[in-house]
Amino acid sequence: MIPSSRRQFVIRLASLATVASSGMALSACMGDGGEPPVFSYGVCSGDPLADRVMLWTHAQVPNSSEDVPLTYEVATDASFATLVSSGSTLASAASGHTAKADATGLAAGKDYFFRFRSGDTVSPVGRTRTLPAAGATSVSLAVFSCSNYPAGYFNVYAEAAKSGAQFAVHLGDFIYEYGAGGYASTDAKALGRVVEPANECLSLADYRKRYAQYRSDPDSKVFSASLPLIAVWDDHEVANDTHKDGAENHTTATEGSFAARRAAAIQAWHEWMPVRAPDASNLMKIYRSFDFGGLAALHMLDTRVIGRDKQVEFAELLNPATAATAQATLASTSRTIMGSTQLQWLQGQLAASKATWQVLGQQVLMARMEFPVSILTHLNPDNTSPEALAAGQKAITDYLTAKGTAAQAPALLTDAQKALLDTKLNPKLGYNLDAWDGYPVEREIVLSTAAKLGKKLVVLAGDTHNAWCSRLTLVNGTVVGQEFGTSSVSSPGFEEYLSALPPAQTKQIFEGVVNDLRYADTSRRGFLLMTFTPAEAKGTFCFVSTVKSRTYTVDATTTLNFSA
Image (cartoon, rainbow, N blue to C red):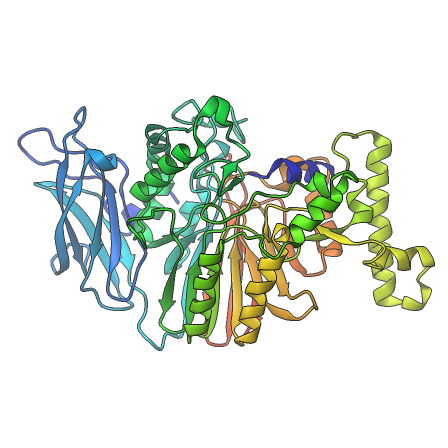
């Protein structure tokens, strides 16, 4: 969700039949005898390596808490005539009847079919793929963020299942924790998508039930059965604006221990996601790397739970009484968004990897999304009078005019315009301090590391519900890499908060004011299709026309390239 400070800023400023037709069964065969288990939430796979992949399902005998022994099968064909891996696993009551299996002995860069069995009862069939062997020349990733059940249908998932992508990457907010009637729920009842449980998720049972509802969605099932998933969490898998010591959407006095809530949320995430825990003794540790045949190394990070210091509020920077303290906090060399252990791990991974592309899969925007104070000071959320709105618009127009004059005819700049462009007189601040703009020292360390090592850096980001492509620059302006920020699966973007402002104008403001920004789409839901070759990293933004109807169109005409 857009944090409160960011929201205040912007207020002012394929179906089941598709898979069936591809030969992928979506209904289980029921065996004879006693009541069989039900595979209500389909199957999925994840965390692929060159020789193995994690398989996942949920199996439960109706109205029973008994464990369900399962056999998993992996084959090269949809009829399962040629099995290449099989074994046993358990859908236990202790794990909420979820089950995982690490299917080994697979060949690199191959497609496989998989399923689970309980006696004669067979799960739906899924398709998965292993990472390529050394010498890969192309890889494609479908990148997602912010799938919000009450906000609308998962048309984006349906479309991605048909996109031709080889792997899926989810950057977090796979679920949302709010109760019925909470964030983005205006149309939930009409769409038949009121959340379960009705209360906000606090306990393990709550989070399990919420994951079950999300995975019951037909488009989610199709998507999950189609592509191996590499995932990390963001804040809503726990609570809005989570940091290592708490969250904006958690009140200890009424909701109990944050540590207990976080532990429950993290346990449920590991149960319901097809992930291979890097450290079974510490489920908070989810950062891990994947090598795509030496072409791309994908380093999946946690910028949310394990190490993040509490966010600085935007209002603190604009309030004269708190500005000095807030600025000192932002500039602190000890301030962290990842934690020192994870940062050192990442630096080691970047140094050791020989892959052509170093790709960071993480939650929040790393690029500088900075606005001058001359604009920010006119964006007072407590004053929405026509006069205040007009002053804000004038501040934007004055700044863009000065910037345009400097580019086209610098000799014509007035003293007032020169002052607007002088960052000492008119400094810039990141409007979203929940992102890396709120952790500038650590950002500089990460980008400097990549630059010193001579790495080709691509950063993937989600969280904002809007689509972005930006240059990644050091403080001195050196371009280090490129960031591609995916839009949301269904959570609303700026179009909800700027409904009176045409999307084209919002786009114009952001692209005009923010120096490092190359592209923005602030009004459409979608996913990002990333394609890597030895010569370039290419991002295609795939948008659906609506998430409020199962009838929609697709626009995949915007592609941006970053050359090696």
